[in-house]
Length: 624
Image (cartoon, rainbow, N blue to C red; front, side, top):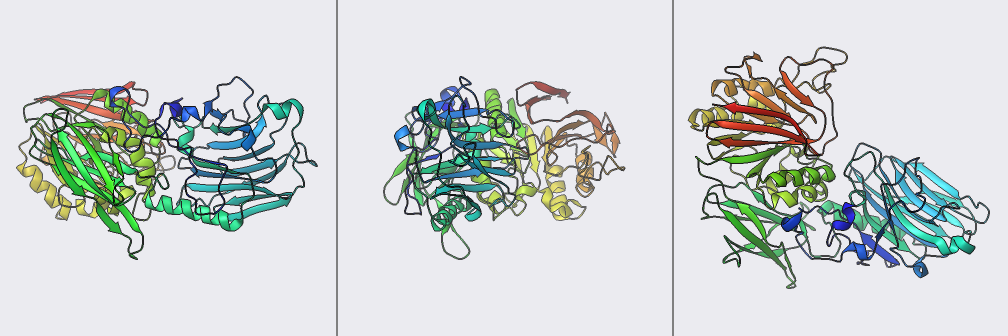
């Protein structure tokens, strides 16, 4: 399974806790989101391989059914038997749940052949918590079963099961959820005692490509009961990590990136974020060893109350580069104590000359499923495009107060790609305040929308969150007309997040009950500019499906002078669906996660759309 191909993404360390009581053992989990082959790289400290601590269990013994499901992953032998608590204990789980399908995980002490009920179990599935314990009075187990819905930060759960002096206690997000008196624990005997093992299992059949490290972020096991105050303190500790976007406690690491932004013929922008204040040394060149060097101080942003630092983002522009050329680069970060971490040697390519062939990939609505974005990133990398467009909703809602979505979800899945392939994004409603969007990107002015040229094509990147600016005479409408009027490019593409035309089932009225607008009418006010100035294709997301239109002009199909619209919201967002009847403009629809690529040479354009298995789902050839 993917979980065991990672390097340095599992931390079997007892790191500093805010509580005084130390666990018997503590683990942090992170999936293997690295490219394959020679491109494999994980920025930051190289930690131990988890295979030496966990044994991945195939179905050689009876799996424990949980909510009638078999586990998709099972991990055992990660805690020596002599360390397994025999009397009082505490089990602590920190989970990240940001999907709309039921998934689950549990930690349990059980006989590996399941001849008897588990000695104890703590688990989560869907919206339910389960804590069970075998006692002398109840050999089949006492159970606390509770439904929950108030996740903190929208998507995190902190769950703690305590057994102390005959009492079971279940805590949720720092608060006592339930407590019952159960008496003494039942003691396993005979063969059961010999065969007992702790197992950590994940139940993820409803989320393809998801693995345990997507769901379980941390596990702690204590050989004593910890107090409510200590539990609350631990919860606060995790909460502060999330708010700051810190992935690992007390470990010098890259919280984001490094990643590439806005490549031109002679320059490229680099960005990264550390968990602390650093200085950075960037080495780069056309071959190894790297001969060019640039020193940079990370930007320090302070919370509005001037208390704790929010983040430490670094940014640098490498200039004076040769066009269409492959470069190598490496970033070394040094903190105030003199500790260093490195990104590893990575690569990028500058933009090509106007008459050269080039290719680019397009994704949209990467949102909340890093496991889907990991899949798409690897497929896109396999095609080696020159750059990538992201059509907005990079996050599900990564506005100012929800920084964690950038660190834990977007960058976790996409850094592997964008550390080598530059990204040109537009903002979606998920980034509508532009707070983190602007801090995590180095893009041209004006803020929120911009233009760039690549080869013989111009790209016009708009902010459709400000849809009132799409009306004639308004800011983005005026700006776009000026840009289109002066454009001499052979190919013209427009990108924004919201849909001028879409056959979505319910975003523009309930198509199962009434006639709908089939698109955002406010956004559609800018469409006459596309038609007037010969825009070839318009790309957008927002709706989590794929749709390519027939050429459209004057609100009807026009094969000679029409503009083609491509809706590509197939990243990690929750999938949506189409209206029950075919739209008048529809050329192709597909419900599923996806991406597409475009190859251009002179007057020829080749368009191909793929699903997450790399299967071709749509194609189009255009010639000028």
